[in-house]
Length: 330
Ligand SMILES: C[S@@+](CC[C@H](N)C(=O)[O-])C[C@H]1O[C@@H](n2cnc3c(N)ncnc32)[C@H](O)[C@@H]1O
Image (cartoon, rainbow, N blue to C red; front, side, top):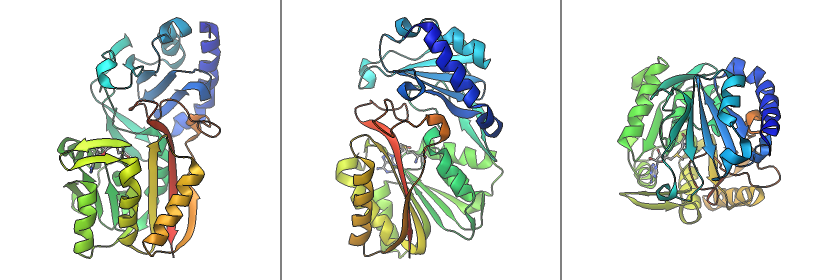
């Protein structure tokens, strides 16, 4: 594509997101092929743009795309993250393409605020593909006990805590990410006593909770496709359904289970089928299962074919477009 083609795709994307920008300053501006820019994903985080380049020829293909991005969006800085190689060893270090990009910034998403790290080589700290779930969770009110597994910076836990009098438990193996979660909770002025931050392997937490007879009204399972920690290796293929079964067993009647993955190797219909089978295996009956939409700024990615890049954090071969399902028990 010539640079003028890029300019047109960018103009279209920028205009299409005008309404969305009233609600949030953290959104996906260009979503690779789905937005007419194959190999290039651009996320906006307040005054900064983060560009994920999925092939080495991006610069040649799109010309001076950074200048076009700066001109049209008015961004103060643009950071580039190389995603052309499967793992970090084969990737170039991130660099600044334009202006200056702060180490940390605060973004607004509807009523919520999140701290992000736009220069971080892997993840900025807020996954944009789960915005619809955060919106849904901010409506969680009353007295709901929520378990947020693989919580990362706890954006889903913070959304769940917003108008909820119940307890929200965030579980992650990383103390650093849980610390980030605590900062996010404080940033939103939410009382610290109702949110817990547990540094533990999610599988172990589920076993512990079962032994203690704990129960939850909402459980969120949103693991990475692959991870290695002191507790061992997690892979979607080996571990996901086992964990989901354990989650289902801990839900109260009429409880809600949010099952998410960015693993690129499973079709939506198969995921739904496995979810139903897993609920059955756990002895739980569901009243409803529904798929959650991707946010509008993902431009319909993954509806017909797998989109490249996923969350911009893992090699495209492993990481695909988000699949998110909500199951409500009877
Ligand atoms: C893909 S993110 C999860 C995204 C998160 N649900 C969100 O909404 O931002 C990966 C997170 O899983 C955590 N993690 C990886 N393996 C884990 C394990 N076995 N148990 C608990 N957390 C784990 C990592 O530390 C990281 O914070």
